[in-house]
Image (cartoon, rainbow, N blue to C red; front, side):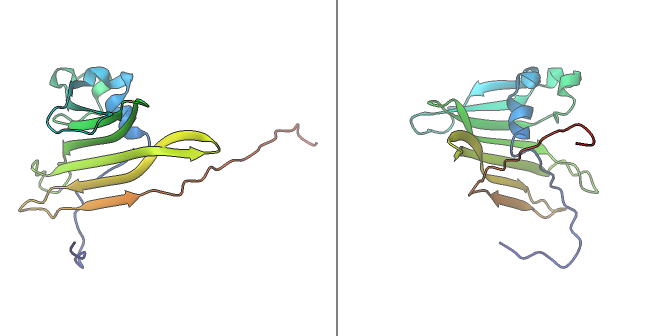
Length: 165
C-alpha cells in the first residue's frame, strides 16, 4: 500500500449503501426489471452457498424504476442456502466522475454479511465493506475498506405525555 501524496486527489470513488442500500438497489423486487440475473458457475463455491450474477438490463434504462441504475453495471452475489441470506454482494460500474470523464475508471464495491446476535435475535449485518477504483494513465486507484464487529443494540424508551403534565 502506498502513502497518500501531499496533493489534492480527484477521487473517482463514491460508495454508499453498505448496510441495506446495496441489497435494495440490486436485489429488491422494485428493481427486478432493471437487471438480468443468472446462476454463477464460474467459480466453485462451498457446499451451502449459491452464487448469481447480474447485469443492468439496457432495455429498461429509460424506465423510472431504473433511473438510478448506471448502464453497464455488473455484479454478483452469494446466498447461504440454509438461511437464504445474502452473504456477499459486489457491483462494478463505469465511474466517469473525474475531470476528463474517463470511462475506463471502474468503481467496484463489495459487502460481506454475517449473522450477528443482538438481544437473542439474529441479524445479517455487514462485516466488511470494500470499495475501489481501477488505476488508469490519467487517474490513481483508490481503495476504501471498513471492518465491522462488536455490534451493540441501541435501545431507547420514549413517553409522550399531554402538555403541562
